[in-house]
Image 1 (cartoon, rainbow, N blue to C red):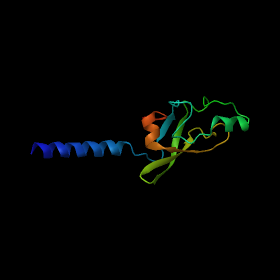
Image 2 (cartoon, rainbow, N blue to C red; image 1 turned 90 degrees about the vertical axis):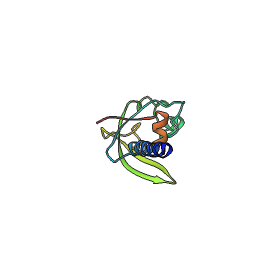
Image 3 (cartoon, rainbow, N blue to C red; image 1 turned 90 degrees about the horizontal axis):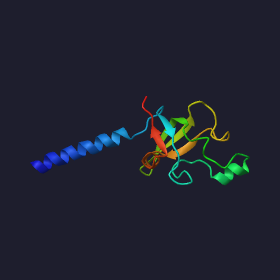
Length: 116
């Protein structure tokens, strides 16, 4: 009996934790600094591509930006989101939207959910 109650409790906790991590269209997120030199789970361009396009080789312009989830889709059990800047400007003055692996970006700290 004890095992059944414990397993039901565990399943409920897993279900609630999964439900809180599903993105919705219109969610506001903040772009944080990457844990390494590059963003691994957000599809920002490499620094050499920015230099070729005449921009500075730095991710500083996007760190701290508020972004809005524009689209959510799933491929092979992975949830991807399309992000747009909340103020309507382009990322680095070049890209109007970027793609991100939602769960991995949240886990690595590249994205942070802002409370509305």
